[in-house]
Image (cartoon, rainbow, N blue to C red; front, side, top):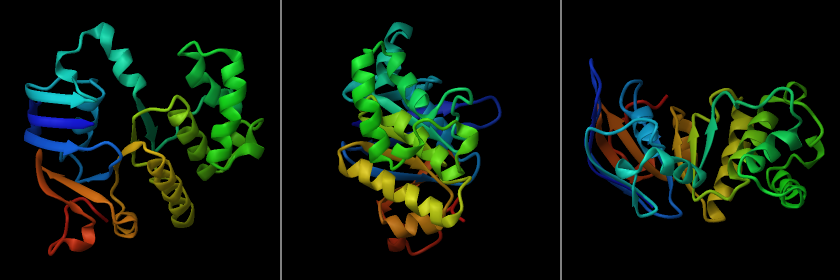
Amino acid sequence: MIKFEHVTKTYRTNIGLDDVSVNINKGDFVFLVGPSGAGKSTFIKLILKEIDSDKGSILVDGKDVTQLSNREIPELRRKIGTVFQDFRLLPKKTVFENVAFAMEVLHKSKKQIRKQVPQILSLVGITDKADKYPEELSAGEQQRVAIARAIINNPMVLIADEPTGNLDPDTAAEIMDLLDQINMRGTTIVMVTHAKDIVDRMKKRVIAIEKGKIVRDSEGIYHFSEEVPGLE
């Protein structure tokens, strides 16, 4: 699904990634961890082709992202849903309209939108919030809307960048259970996090990055004999 082969990305003052090779299979749930500046954001931006690597190849669904033209980038990004710590909802649109907007930009029909949006709102547990505006929702509810918007077009990959960072522990646990449910439906998930308690509880694959290099790649942090950098 996602394959990095000897990928290097350098900036003026530091190294983003240093000769990184890793394979994320279809259906994987992967935590990407590491201290600030370790290379996590670089890893995500390279997948989305927001930046270009200096060396190496990056395959997403069998296509080499490094070779894509600007015209082909939108097609790549349609395969990838994204969720962020700060939700990034449209304040003047209702919950229904926020999720529908992701379909509208792909020119889906009104009939498709009327059918699919309620289904996704039901999946994420906010059917009763369809007519509410973001400011009327709790942080957890806003994140559920953001997740609904990210998966409404059935992406192959969901990238979640610190999705529980603004949530209390109980709400964070609910969001993680939701992401686990989405993963079990077949969506590959790559989640950036600093939350050690979440990583420990979920017992998924952990890829740890430090100074641009992968220093750990194993199932569940509980197997590690020493502390993994970047977890709190």
